[in-house]
Amino acid sequence: MKKIKYVLILFILFSLTTSNCTEKSDGYGCGYHNGHPLYKGPEGGCYYINSNGNKTYVDRSECDC
Image (cartoon, rainbow, N blue to C red; front, side, top):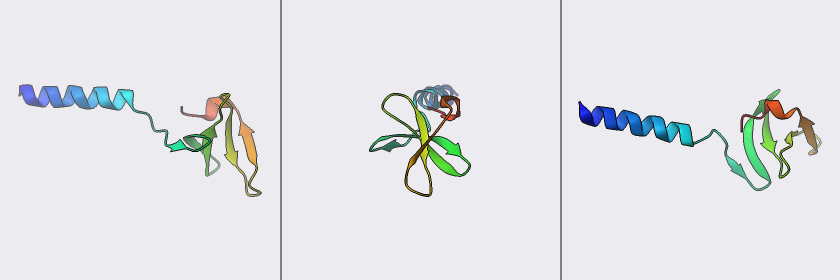
C-alpha cells in the first residue's frame, strides 16, 4: 500500500512540473487557435503561422504556457 502512495505522489509531482509545451526552434507549442499550433515568442507574444507562412499574433491569454 505504501508503494502505491509513493508512486501516486511521484506521478502527481511529475505532472505538476511538466507542461504541455513542446520546444520549437523559435518558441514553444502552447495550444491551438482555429486548428493552428500556437507558439510563444521570445518576448512573450503568442502567435501561429498562417497559410502564407507569416506570424499572426493572438491574445496572450490563448497560450497555455
